[in-house]
Length: 100
Length: 354
Image 1 (cartoon, rainbow over the protein chains, first blue to last red):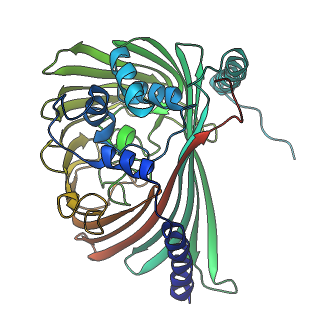
Image 2: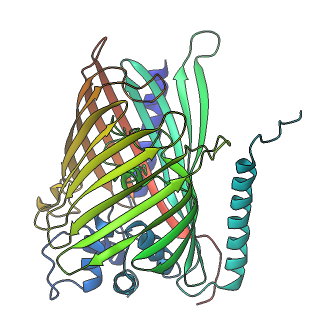
């Protein structure tokens, strides 16, 4: 009985996810997500220093959020400064990457 | 119904500390909210379907994170894990519900400079890397924590006291980071911790995205004991590969885990249906040499391969599935997990100065 309920709850969650995912992310979000998920050689010409710093530090545990309000980028990066022990210079560069 | 008074002065001290942190945060918010420093509510909603040896459970989870900058040098952070475990039960009711709210950290950080950050309050014990880096349900690669996770973290994973951390040496080719802490004993609900001290230090090579380090903890309560460990992380630039491993030794036993995950983003791009897949494998072993019941480690020597598969949907939704085969006494068993998580992050205050 519990298996049936588990399956129905999971199915409901998946259905909800599919409905949400039925919408195509807007191009800006796709571009940001692409920047965050593409892992390539860290050359300054191809990527900004901020993105490189993000991939070196924050990106080791998680990818960049697909959408981040400019109002909270400072708070988020300060949180990462503590977690990933970023320098003030890293903080400035990552801020420019997340909120150009 | 009257509650017994706290038997130790320490209990009152912890509550005073918590009240002071909250008061400081409220004052700080009122004093300064700059354009990019609006407080943040982040975290994840999750739903875990866990089956261990034929016993199934459902676990709806919410793991909120609160981040409040205060001035230019302080930061208040907090994270909780609130979950309900729904188990089958014999008798009239087909289910048994158990509620587990856990305060994982409530800390105030003082950012002195890049070499030193001082933290006070309740924080994640900086032993090894998993506890601080990979415990959030929206980050961990496998729904289950490693077998050796309780070594050095004392089951709760949190400490009450003070911590210093930072990057001692920062060169273009390498960095030396550290974290050192002291924790007081506390049996206060939601602030439970053991009296302990310890440190973690690591060398990180940014150009290789390679880090290795060591951890040590001295447990200073009841029976004094030492726990030590070492870890290695490697995430090459050229491939979306994650290799992480830890080895830990404590009075209860010793063991290791090593995991490797490969995101198939090189097949059709990160947003193709194949590119959103991330298969992974983790191997872990634990060898018991002592300890006592209730240490949350396997009762016997255990060997466990884990096979995992993550699928990254847009909008921060992730579906994870894993299968593990546990070889241990008295019987071997299978462990199945299916987890769905949705990560969110948004301002904690409406409006705000721009």
